Image 1: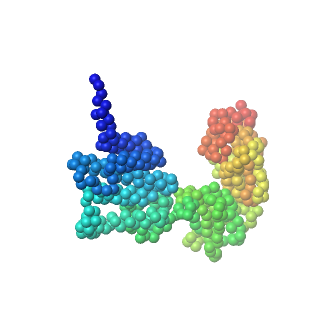
Image 2 (image 1 turned 30 degrees about the horizontal axis):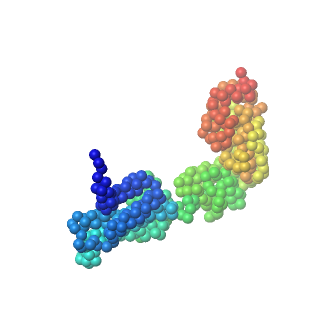
Image 3 (image 1 turned 120 degrees about the vertical axis):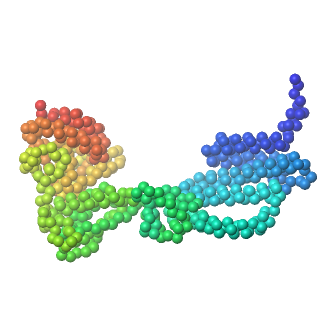
Length: 505
């Protein structure tokens, strides 16, 4: 069977076949293969646009002009379809350019509203061009005769249009962004999770979704608590029984130095708000990393205020004007704090010695010795094996670990905290360098003081081993994640090391 080459050539050179094949092939490439590659999709779309324009002009078809009046019905249909395909390609090319431009500019997700509006305008413009250039319908006359309909639609869609234009104004002004925490009219607050053409969606503190129309949001008083940066300022006041104000400020500075939840820059501040016969009111002002950290920071500071105040012999003042509790001394002498944190009380408060009987704690408390350190003095160097357990009696300390050329802060210590238990019980080195941030007073329990107690009741080794292993597992950051820390995380292995160190059978 012989192939009719002239007929095949006529088919291949037919403008309908060429235009249709090019349109199908281009759509397959741009809308299918390159769908998830915006930049390559734009290049492909522009290439298809240029090729399609060249092909139509080559066959005498001008997409932006009406077709020849002498054309047959079949030719008119073909010209119309070719022009529609060409105008659709114009729209897709412009839309691809808009999307790639927004991606290259690295705009946030809330810019999608503007992107959708631009895309909508492109579609409307292309549709009107098709109506004019393909079907020859006078668009000007259509717009003029549809004025009444436009007025009716405008009145019916008044609120919707108000939300739309308010959304455009909000996105252009960018008073907030996705992820920002905002307060609206001092009533509604939440984190922005989405903005669209009609409304802004907030997720409040109760994890409920709040939807606010853009028109209402544009007219409301708005506070962006995540701007100009994510850090958030916090203020609160405490009342203490009156004593020398300078001493109270010094103790409260120790509180701020002990905190791990607040930012160091800008520096937190203290302000005496009032002074009378019943109380001194101190205002704390500080910043946290973001709004979500406010609760944790305040909880930590309230705990530290109580601990430092008790350690310094200060009393909290009641709000009803009654006399403060006389459980502690209020001498205001930095070197002679009250007796609330005596050795026996501190041992009773430590989870490490929770299993001891009262008689055993009292006997151990009698062996405790005290030491003091000045500001910036090194208490123990990183890697040094301590022969004593150290309990903070007064002041604030920091634990820093050096890893290669980096200094990592492992934690801060306040009255009632202890360190050196892993060295004392398991013979491991200190995970970091412990340094005094203020004047510090500590209690020390030497290994020799603990050994008689362990030998009298060897079961204490199992109790201490279990408690210490749990602490290592729960507070890896305090132990620096060292190999020693991993080794003492096992209760059974730790008990064996304690028995070996204290020579227990």
